[in-house]
Length: 84
Image 1: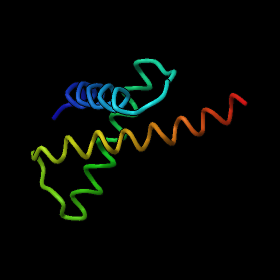
Image 2: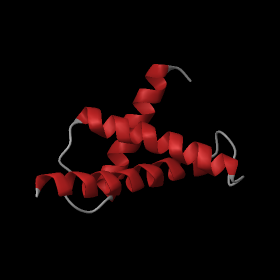
Image 3: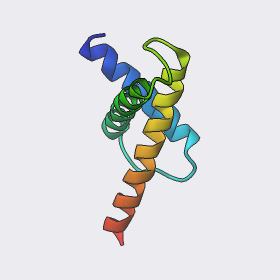
């Protein structure tokens, strides 16, 4: 998959994660895309290293969204501390 495909998938994963995560996340499209890409990479390498799924399975998409949600929680905790 090329860089454009990775960006598009990261954006989609980021949007899904933001829609599923409760609370108000104040971030733009670029940050949403970056968190989606990072969540997808995190889930891909951890899940495949543990032998949970192989490349191309639907579990990879689900794991990518979960990985992005974890990163969103971490981001909101860090960003929340800077605002107060």
